[in-house]
Length: 210
Image 1 (spheres, helix red, strand yellow):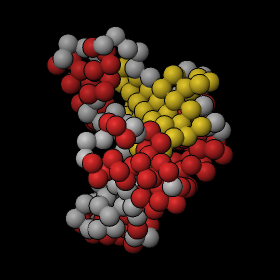
Image 2: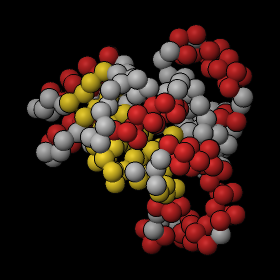
Image 3: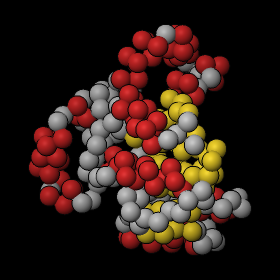
Image 4: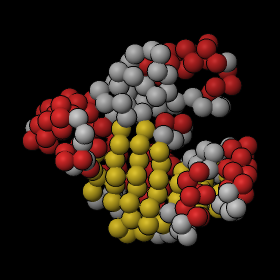
């Protein structure tokens, strides 16, 4: 498995504990070293390399699973990165992808401002630089706010043969709230309702098969 954007590195360390072959790719040398140190504290040496998914050599037909959780919004040339991920997956391999959703009411990138993601890119960048300084453009800006139709189309153009969104992935029987369970059932029955709900959902989530 490969995780793009390991952050503090709990994923590679947990995988190591369980005997899984798991590599982490992290763009920040500081975070990569912090992740290695976390692993050492747990008695393991996690496999973490420093690199940018846009241009890192991930190989071809190497991984069964690639995880990209809350990372591609920070990848400036995101399609280029996805193409590398696609090539790195084995035939039949799976990509777990989760990122921003442009029209989410509350954004994980900046929760205090409702519909933050709907701001035009230049205005969003200017707003974040005003709050956090110019270095935010190098240290964590969300270059992109995605949406479900854009991602589904892009995954298909890159070559993924099947993509499942979060409505398709979840079993209503596993949803605790009765209201949410009923909404999920209705979304599975109605493509129009599903599109509306996903438009405003908190994140874009897909599992894509090569």
